[in-house]
Image (cartoon, rainbow, N blue to C red):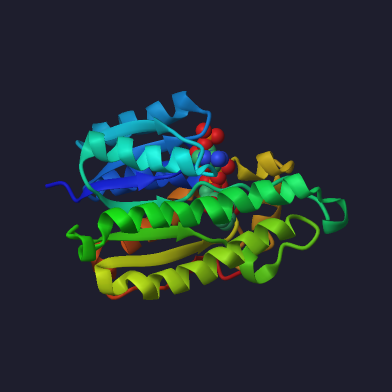
Amino acid sequence: MSKGLCIITGASRGIGAATALLAARDGWDIAVNYAGNESAARTVAARVEAEGRKSVVIQADTSKEADIVRLFDEAEAALGPVRGLVNNAGITGKISQVRDMSEAAIREVMQLNVIGLMLCCREAVRRMSNKDGAAGGAIVNLSSIASRLGAPNEFTHYAASKGAVDSFTLGFAREVIGEGVRVNAVAPGMIDTDIHASAGAPDRAARLGATTPIGRAAAPEEVAEAIVWLLSDAAGYCAGSILDVSGGR
Ligand code: NAP
């Protein structure tokens, strides 16, 4: 039996793609959102369907309000009421020191990682809240341990965006837990995905993973396990939790 629709932003690659597959195995039907990489998104959707679940592939830039509303509308039209949301889409921006950052680079990171995530949460609670007669739901936001490390000399703007995700997760969780909506976050450490190459350092996960207490970077599936657990009823007493998946870092 289906657990219902789970929308995963940025599900075409990395942690989002791994989460789509594990969530499908756990019984969720999946809206696979992507920004530009349609073929990767379609591959993820095919793997979801191979698990016996339904999927829909939806292009939407989750830094834009109109795209976010359309994403939720199209996902619900295809797969029914939304019961789960993973706010996974995120970017670091290019590695740089603050002295060299442009306003545009700072805005781009904040617009997607903070404002887009908040608008996705708004859209979800409007459709999940039992105050409005819906059946409730669960939301997992992707933070990062960068929020407490600060990411000096790399991407302080990104670290600050994840600090905002942490604060927002706490406040929003306390605001809506009485409406049947559980909100939590996962804070990954060094995960082996394309995000490091996009930042300008393809070897970053292997290089810095070796310096962590556990001595390695993680596979995206190791983060997906935590996300899917927080989505599930097994985490029914978790609200406002921020779960580190960081190998002790
Ligand atoms: P990734 O491998 O770079 O994948 C990014 C995903 O987000 C892709 O599916 C991409 O879609 C999508 N995306 C990018 N911009 C988007 C936009 N404007 N609208 C909608 N989707 C967009 O990233 P990742 O490493 O899996 O990271 C996922 C999340 O975990 C992020 O929030 C990140 O901050 C967080 N995190 C990652 C690490 C790590 O070490 N990897 C550590 C801590 C936290 P396309 O394929 O279409 O481009």
